[in-house]
Image 1 (cartoon, rainbow, N blue to C red):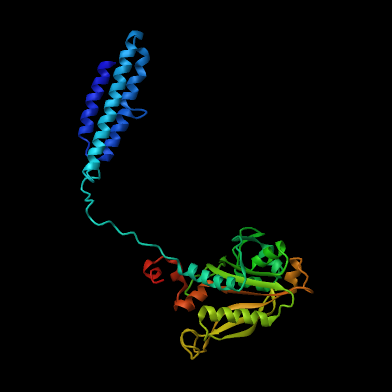
Image 2 (tube, rainbow, N blue to C red):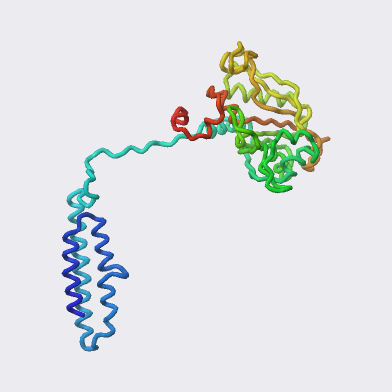
Length: 337
């Protein structure tokens, strides 16, 4: 046993002396002193040594382990004193380091935050909800009966007869009003999904920001004032708004909101198709049926709601003509923002 230990010590001394870098040195330490190392394995035979020899063998084994540990530490200090000799061969530590590039916020995330920040400055609370919804929260609770033709425009991804990927973040109206009593001021951003063919202006995944306000005595004038203020804060004080009659099952009356073209200042260009106006969002007064579904008395409370596509707003803001650019992860495009 003593001869075996002395032989291992000589082998370890040679291996440590020939170690070329800190990685090889660590492998040498594990080889001899690790849990399954050669010295450790040799000492497992100590029980077979004659009792009168065990003290002497134990003393030698401790000396061998301590000597190997000492040699390892000396070699480690030698590497450190040479300032980089422990690094891989061929790697010059005097060369300048590789600069790490800082990440940037995605333009859609940036625009969504800008939209919500303005509404929060108006006193709105920001909430988020699940991407997978039930038919009730996505449709029936928002006054879309099972046979309502307006469902066809939503091109829904159904996971089962009852579960689906939400087609709008308007679902948060029902969730919030079920849990909280008015007055309420809420803005709800998030992803939505529709089974649409992908082209320059459509995508099967996109982002929406919906919002609603419920209180006593709320009327359409309040809605126009809030949205006009948001438009001027987001696009600039010279941008004008107009409201055109429209239809949404969950609002009555309903309207589409147009803004004067931010590219031609209303004079007419390719973006606005020479009309001077571009559509930016939909809105309206919350339908009494929606309030009733949420156990909110429509005789006492009234409210308005609005919703916009983040991609559409971003395309106007940055003069982008293809929605697919947001999802291709092309750094040449993303580094512009």
